[in-house]
Image (cartoon, rainbow, N blue to C red):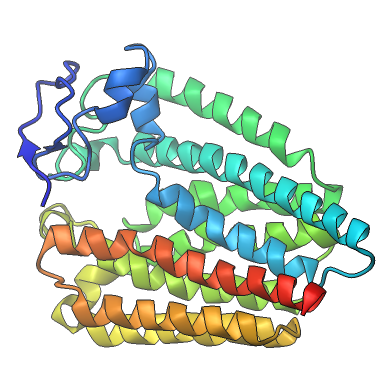
Length: 335
């Protein structure tokens, strides 16, 4: 377990020590404190650049949608290499876009949740409740991030631009859901997996039932990993009235986690079957299933560091599914 230290007073960042701030998953500045100018540091932490797991979880559905949307690499070796180059470009663009949009989503979330964050152990040292960034500054920064995201989105076809713009409805709605429903994780899933639709649309200029099924699969995946994540805050959430699936299920969460991961895997499989994918995809999906089963079996829902570790392990789940998709592309072209 990482060492922790108590936070400094609001507006006075702690000195970088390579440790975690007590009760949080936030490094005490870490590389942000060592490498970035002091004026930039609060905004980098507002974007969670020192905790990239959220970016990965936003990015994988994008990459899955792109890989499924490509379908097959056909033609001469020169044409295949050209298709691979285009695929790599899409991956890079979505990587940049996911980083910026995750930062925008975190900024908006912190603006709307500033009063709640000040009362929760894990979030009390975020830049806004800590007094390092004002609301006006945060709104200006949010506008800047959205403009950069729009610039990246405009690289794609106009159908994809429309699909991407539609995501803002769920992105801006999500932070309010924990106040009115026990199922805010569904709304997070709606936002975090939109990339499955966008990735497919960027490649094909249209949508079909395959990316829709993949999108729904991602929502169940999010229900699984974010229920685990929410168990970190359940005591504070109960005191301040914030709702979550972790509080709703309580000690009976594991059967629900099993259901969520099983449905996610089944629907990813249905999407792959609809896309005509071969054995490399099924191998990657099977390994992802084992990783999900390990999460559910091994997680200690009353141990916050354990919950955080299992939540972060979903990066491996995402890579395994992607590896299966990538393997299928190579096998279909050269097998």
